[in-house]
Picture: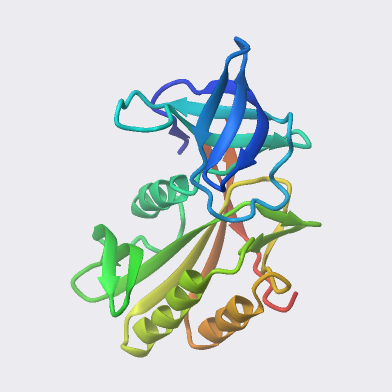
Length: 234
């Protein structure tokens, strides 16, 4: 099942990213526009000035920028850098069974709070409840997709709360959406955030499920590729 963008994207070339949330882009017409970058991380391994990009045009007079940066082409491969999209992808594909393991759930809710964390998806039926946290993965190191690309205290807290979810008899899932196809294994970014890596290992040992799901990104939309192996040792 392919998820399509609701309207055609706007092609351009990246001039530079700055202030974390802004990027200058040259459109095919030669016009230079400012695009909103939803990705607050370092975007390590997916930034290249002059690279092809695609933007969504947003017709909202209240917004300071009229474009949202969706993807970038690195070494011939499209990488989805909009951190809002994995939540939408996960919600749709979990419900429809594209991401396996959640077929028995009948009710799905987004942005549900448990303890001191807010999780992206809660799935439940009359017998079981499951909390799912979704993370966007864009960083490549060799053949590995790695997360995070910058230290994340919020991500650390999510893992700690998922352990509590599991301890309280519910199902807990850490779901990584890999928005690039030039990698074949998921692993923590030990050198960037060793605390996160350690907590991920602890969460796995406590029964938190770790799922890495690879997605093929294109200017038309998103296609599922399948479950990616997880290596917590490297």
